[in-house]
Image (cartoon, rainbow, N blue to C red; front, side):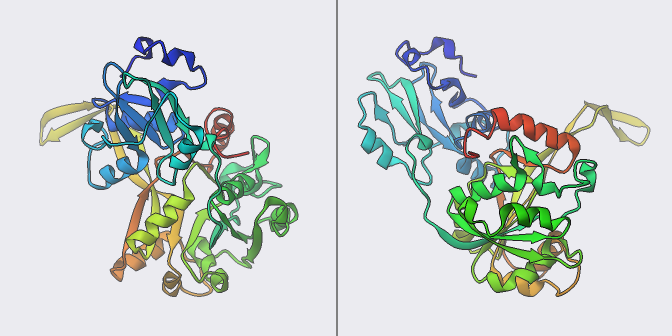
Amino acid sequence: MIDRTHINLKAMVIPMKMLNDFILSERDTIIQALIKINKNTTGTVVVVDEAHKLLGTLTDGDIRRALINNVSLNSSVEKIYHKKCIFFHEDYDKKQAGQAFNQYIKIIPIINSDRVIVDILEKKDFPSEYEPKTNAVLIMAGGLGTRLRPLTQHLPKPMLKVGDKPILQLIIERLKRFGFSNILLSVNYKSDVIENYFMDGAAFGVSIRYIRENKRMGTAGSITLAENYLNEPFIVMNGDILTNLDFNHLLEFHQKNGFYMTVCSRSYEMQVPYGVLNIDNENIVSLDEKPIFRYVVSGGIYVLDPATIKSIPRDEYYDIPQLIDSLLGKRQKVGNFPILDYWMDIGKIEDYHEANKDIKNQFERLTYV
């Protein structure tokens, strides 16, 4: 790992950036890059040599493509980062720098005459609005939240506060930032609390319609109730998820690849707390001390083509995993979009407490304002 104590003195006069959160060497691993990306929340890191001279940049998209191609998390970033990248010298023109940002470029390195990194410009330093979108976002907000009792005894789970705002408000504000204002809320349990708080959404800069489940319909069944509003690719997500996901990038990924459905995925690790014996009959072949098993799990966020609704039974309980199985059985293209940003599924009491810690030091400073 790079030690910032050796960085050029010119960089030290820039106290605003913690440069170590943005830089790594090409010998560092993908997992080390992900840790940096998760910490700086920009989706990008800068690759430098031992003298802190600029070599290139690495984005979460580069890592996502590598993982899809079965590259190990323990591989070095040497073969997957971009050696050609945009950068500016110390005497850069601010207007020109602002114009260099786009949906893919989130940070721009600033170098001195020796090509040493002295600062990092972030896209958020040059505010720009995403184009408004008509695509609907269907948020599943009707769950009972039984695992969060007693917190959900008088409130629906999406209305529990993280920081000083309900989870659902944080989700809607995030979507609005990326141009999504056509919001559909699927409600059931204590729906009046949600409807009285958000009304038609005007106070939050969005338009909200309510999809009322008269009975439990499952995560996919309620989609049929919103069919009249879903005439172009739409996003479906659970109402208990906080994430720094770039929803604009997600939609573009889905459309560019022509998927029938795109499933956002998340890497999940489980560690066995014991030494695991590998046995061949009576013989112990080897012992793996507290091994870690890694899985790819659904992140509770999806993009669907309107045609997928035809695969959902009417007026009965039906879940998203059943829909995925149905589409795969029909040989429809189902895409995988790994979530490399902050992501928290608030399903249990400990998750809720963790999210309240995270909002102070992890994702609040990025977009939840």
